[in-house]
Amino acid sequence: MSKQIQWGILGTANIAAKVGQAIQKANNANLVAIASRSVAKAKHWAETYRLPKYYDSYQQLLSDTEIEAVYIPLPPSLHAEWTIRTAEVGKHILCEKPLSADYGQAMDMVDACRANNVQLMDGVMWVHHDRTRLMEQIIQSGDLGELRRVTSAFTFHWDQFPTDNIRVRRELAGGSLGDLGYYCIRAILWAFGDLPEQVWASAGYQNEVDFNVSVMMRFSGNRVASFDCGFDTVLRKWFEIAGTSGSIVCDDFTVPPDEQAGFRVRDAGGSSTPYIINNFQQEVEMIRRFSQQVIEMKSSVQGGSTSSQVRTDWTNQAIDTMRVCQAVTDSIHRSAAVDL
Ligand SMILES: NC(=O)c1ccc[n+]([C@@H]2O[C@H](COP(=O)([O-])OP(=O)(O)OC[C@H]3O[C@@H](n4cnc5c(N)ncnc54)[C@H](OP(=O)(O)O)[C@@H]3O)[C@@H](O)[C@H]2O)c1
Image (cartoon, rainbow, N blue to C red; front, side, top):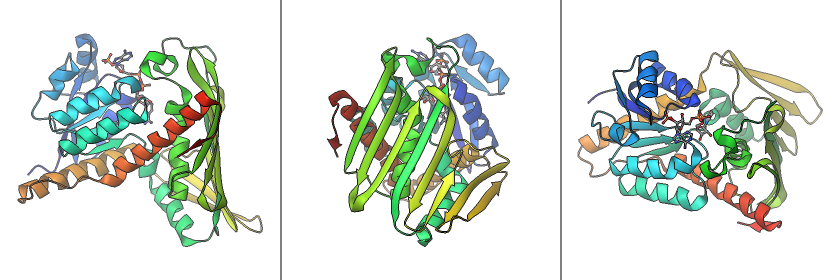
């Protein structure tokens, strides 16, 4: 059995360059093909990254029997369709965030993956960083006391309005909640290990997409969380997790520099202890983990098991994030608090 998983990519997206190179760097993965709606773009991409194969349609790549795992960095409106088509040909799927345009589509994707016994994971990279594991250990150690509040923000500012960008196109399921708020929601669910009981949100719109969103959440046990996201404020990508006796502050949780990824723990007296992880590429670790999972699924089938074990924790994290995104959207539309 091959110790390397053969990957293909649907679409010459900007983010495909970063993740494609991560596939090439991971020692258990091999990038063999790219597909684009344009043959010229597919050929150029394959030449730039020295891939043996390219296709001028996504479906053609899915027909390539050598490919075992597919990375889907398409606009969010296309995630459900292409995840389901990929699952139906028995290939494993790393789908970009937001997992889908809405919660109903996300459940259809999960059902298709379950029916075809393939792994599904979303492309949230920071959860695969060693820094995240270290912060998790500190939260679980009890040093912060009882967790009370998580606060987060992810914003950036465009100097000129980019009308062509997928993020500001309603028909492609653009908007700052799916593009940026998705990360804040994941951080909040990760820190509390729980879903909120109630969500209240408000948004400002441009070009018919949510351009900025502000959200409050109530959790059981008198815990609260809040976040804001948007395309209209300077770059911010931080969270604070605060308990009764300490807090963690991470200034760049979504994309830290590879060389140094840090965070600070502040105690009840106000003293701050810095932590640093050096030389870590979260996108390579994401690909390595996903490929390892596929290798293990293949080996369980070859060992005589009728079905291989998917990792439901990855799928559940994506689904829970979509569930909260949906509650946020519903709250914005109703101008009212929404119970989960
Ligand atoms: N995990 C992360 O860190 C991260 C970072 C950035 C973005 N993302 C996510 O990755 C996805 C892609 O983002 P991106 O900024 O890389 O997008 P992008 O550069 O605009 O690329 C999207 C690709 O989708 C394909 N496509 C198919 N139908 C399309 C249509 N109607 N309009 C436009 N493109 C279409 C195109 O590929 P072809 O023309 O080659 O077919 C295009 O290159 C999004 O879901 C985004 O949220 C994730």
